[in-house]
Amino acid sequence: MKGPLIDSLVQQGVSRRSFLKYCATLASMMALPPAAGPAMAAAIAAAATRRPPVIWLSFQECTGCTESLTRSHSPTIETMIFDMISLDYHHTLQAASGEAAERARLESMQANFGKYLLIVDGSIPTANTAYSTIAGISNYDMLMETAKGAAAVIAVGSCAAFGGIPHANPNPTGAKSVGDLITDKPVMNIPGCPPIPVVIAGVLAHFLTFGSLPELDDKGRPKAFYGETIHDRCYRRPFYDQGKFAKTFDDEGARRGWCLFELGCKGPVTHNACATTKWNGGTSWPVESGHGCLGCSEPDFWDAGGFYKALSMPVRPATAAAAAAGVGAVAGLAVSVANRAKKSAAIRTHQPTTLEDLEK
Amino acid sequence: MSMNDLQWLTWVRGTGFNIAVGIFLLGVVWRLIEVYTLGRKPDLAAPRHVPGASGWHTIVRRSLPPPGMLARSPVSYIGGYVFHVGLAIVVFFFAQHILLVKQLTGLSWPGLPSQLINLTAVVTMVAMLAVLVDRIRQPVKRFLSTFEDWFTWALTFLPLVTGWMATQHLLLPYTRMLALHILTVELLLVFLPFTKLFHAFALIGSRWYNGDTNGRKGVPV
Image (cartoon, rainbow over all chains, first blue to last red; front, side, top):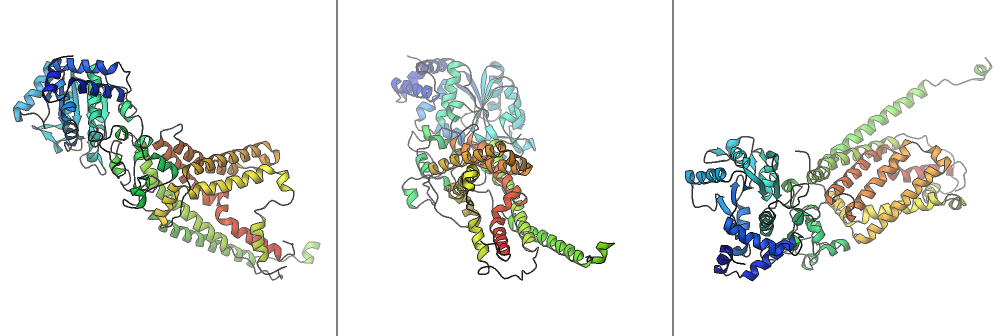
């Protein structure tokens, strides 16, 4: 296997062998048959000559998703995405600015109408579209305009996928997800705050290899990566089953690596691949480092009742309880007074039956 | 956008929980005050034994089958014991449940291993199904059963089966099943004070009262 991509990787110190290994890893992570690894490598190498156009739009976001991808553990491998695609527009990464930048987007859209891949990170304000604009164009208009000619749309990060933090209560900007607004095209969600780099790379490789999006779950997420919960794959799961829980972040249980459920871990309700792929080149991941899962790849994780409250705990203290008990006491006393009044009335109006009455 | 599973779970853990606990406390306080302020005329008859002894004795005695009854109605007694004790274990010794009580009241105690709780839940469900089948099959029991009997059985069974299925990852995704579990518990809380399930609170008092009254009427207990 040869080609500009391999050459460029070799220049950056990545051997052809590690490239093939990486492709095999991607294929196996997506539960594809073994033959898919080499096919993927060939497709990625071929793509590097074709370089399918990609337009990356960033709306109400923090750039964390781009950072996650570009600063991933082996930057040369995961950022090869930028070698295998023609990234025609990306605020953070492109050199051009202003008019020239917007022109690049429009030119790519015209030249590749119906063929380009649209990647979005960030949510779209709809309460007032002027809340977030780029070159005087509102996020909403830019998304709609760019989505028209897109072959597929990928919403990267929880903001684009589900609205994320901008969508958190009370959602001042009326933030919406990409999937809320684009309904006539396939939209794939890759949520996470940020998403796992290898997941972004994996689905892009899938798109390049097979020309289609991988199988998605009911929330538009690739099943290969979001099919199981963190809890199902957690190495601390046996402690959960044994009922061994860390009670604080520095107690004996925490030191022994017991389950973090009581410290608010949202692993049981969170679908993501952190427990298997880990982060930073397989170094660790949140639960391994001693902190519960925040549930960042689930819709509205920000409003799910607090990061440090266990799932079996009420979201807020039952403050109305005392008032309700008070109302109950008043109601009970009122009924009691009524009962007593009825009893006294019955006693008052009681007419004794005499022998004469019976003989009448 | 319609409510997704996690939003639904958050609602049952928040607003839904508050409403349910509110109605539960309101109902319990109301009914306890109403019952205990009914007022009884002082019973001037001398108690057969020490004053109050019959009351205390009755509390215990009515938890045991009268002579011969265990053989005549084994499903009611054995099934009844198993599911009551099982429920108590599952409700009060599952670590996640203790956590809930701890957050609300500050009280906590050690939990039991999840596997033991799972096993207990299964045994409890089997016992509940047995008493249900018995109630359907025995003509007298069926005749005496009202809507409330079937309804309260379902109210008790649903939290048990949903909780067990949630921990075992059966039928529905965990998030949805957990939300359903909490919702069914909330239904139980809402209806408990206003149905025969109120025996959880009234049982001891009413047994004592009956026993004490009987003790003053010469009924040997």
